[in-house]
Image (tube, rainbow, N blue to C red; front, top):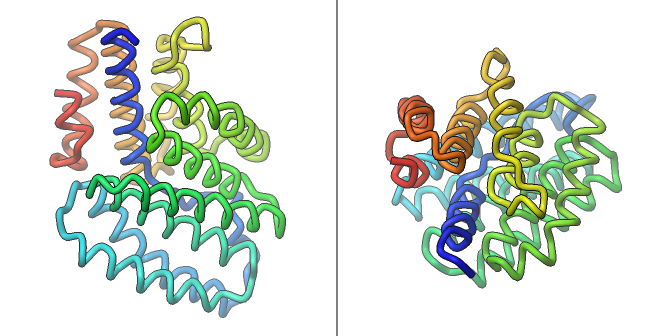
Length: 256
């Protein structure tokens, strides 16, 4: 494997590590009962805090795990199966990310597999774009743990889940970004096309509905795409914009 390919795999693993879950339209949480929605919103506030701390590269492992446990306990009270398992999948993904930060790949893999299973159950209970996207995100985390061998094994299935997510909701921001990762990092013979990724990701920036995490994810992906195209000034520009959101993130350290 040449050095450029090694760098691409390393960068992809890092981006997968810091990918964020999203709360958008066409989720399994639509049309919930009042009591279930109250539980979901309470858990979501706690989970969002943990997510942002992890994205910011917080070293407070015990505090972050405590937040995830609090969110998990609340989510278990949701009676709607699709919403409950969707929420629990998000908790498992972020537990996996914490383990990767601790360089415990075996435990990270276990959390990724639990997340995929929760997402599968959510989809079977009620199809939604976000459940498919979340299953793809968990699969991407699994690939990040296993490197090239994992990518070869899991990538086709992850792409199918992303295709399903985008078919149900073409505006699902995180699915759009995940879908463009292959274009940024894959060899040209395997679908690599960073110039196409730049066009598609740039088109998302004017959106007013993006969360802080989604905008950061788009900006860092654009920086990586421009770096792949050897366009250093554009890569630095997007990296600087992303740094205004999470200045201590691992991705900021990588793109500078």
